[in-house]
Image (cartoon, rainbow, N blue to C red; front, side, top):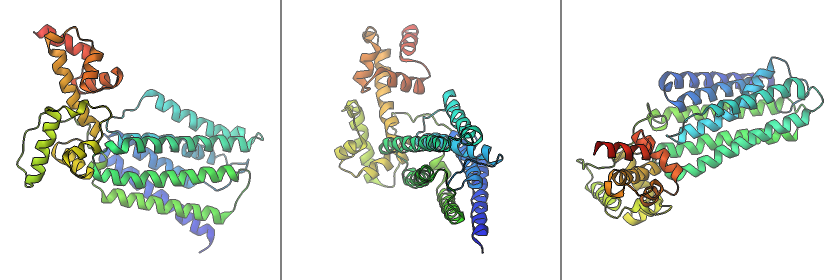
Length: 353
């Protein structure tokens, strides 16, 4: 088999797998933001598989320009996908679409006007610095949200998906900057196509092995109630740990502590972190440790706001007493749980009294 034929086979395999992955995500999770973004990411990667080449010259085939632009804009989709996949409370905003449109438009302009106009290195460098910036942003946000993730399988899969995608995208971006203006050759394109095919196959295989509900919950679910009703458990030790955990939350109000982490809480219970994550996730129904803490804080705040004796206490004081560090996150979390702002909640309770 010639190098050209092997490269074509790798590209075709990547496109086929990505189209199947996109169709599967849209079929099973079209009502879930992470599912839709995952499908968009797969389609963008398919455009990348068709159009990408190592080394860029000033002459890009006109039909390649839209595909290259979509491939570049896909880095924004990658960033948004990682946000939606690992943050159950993430929502798209209108400006996310503008960011994608601007990146895509600049890439298209680079292919059609900027590079052919004698500014090839400038165009390639700026585009790939944008790519590296969004990769860094995705990695940073993924690492920052990692400790609060309670879903064990999602914690494992995020390592592979993000690292593989970030490594491939980062290496390609640096490579494009270094060889801008040169056509490296078919061997480099074949190797790149083979690496992409292997990554896509591995991601597809990994996602097939993991229960989709672990990664992409079928619907945004309301946060579980804070009050815990003991359930029959086959493991008496787990039941005792849950009881001890709820005593820490209800009696000692440990959630009030500043910068409380799951490691600190596990230390108080004298158990490994992974076991505490499993208990909170599987027994209490939470997917995120911060949501678990905030629900307890909000329950305390609700009681304070409904108390006539505390009618003159400022909302910020109520928030700080409950363990929130500032008013903005408190207002957002409170409204997400109750559907109203703290001030509206206080007024409704006063009117009902």
